[in-house]
Length: 261
Image (cartoon, rainbow, N blue to C red; front, side):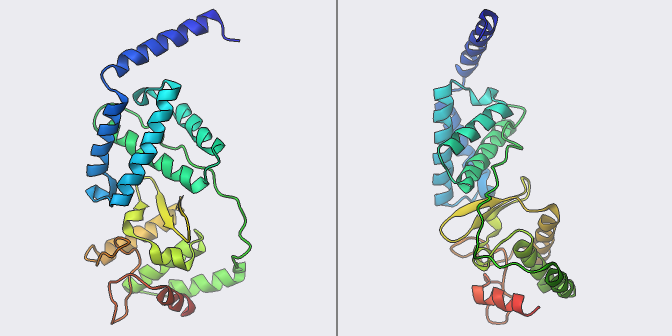
């Protein structure tokens, strides 16, 4: 049971929050987020579907804040964890929860950069991992993995960097051929260590190992930025064949590379 003293403290805290919010309404937060999307998301070049998705996720968060009488500028990590629990209680897929948390990290980072707050309460609040088994996935034995990696390490040059990064994403992070083929540079957030995976029927965020991210960084830095953009964005893995050099690798092309080892 809440004591009279605790009730008084809650009342004073809410009064303080209401006073603080007088200068920044929920509508103001939404306008600030529009600015964040315009200048910050995808290095200032967010796709229309990304903008629509981000705005929808923040709108849901602000509606929850209003219902719970929370001011985003005064929230802590515990509040974000409560929101995460709320999302999970709604039965949302883990990938959807991950996307919503990513949007919040962007939102609060934008508030920091605009001097509204000093700390990002969403930083470090991760989504749960999907533990659902997939009986259709075939696995290599430890011995097969060792032999495979030994061959991959022998590859040299830009093509070798590509192959090592691509195979790391498949072998260590669980990407399938379709996810490798659809991957774009814009899907990677090196600062937060996350990658948006575009698979069959659903998208989800993954949090790769540090050494995997280093491989990706090295590959992208070596190949440069002069890459043809297609309908999915800037291809993460490009072809090195004479006829399609610089273009997104096809699924057949990816299988050919893997089978070549």
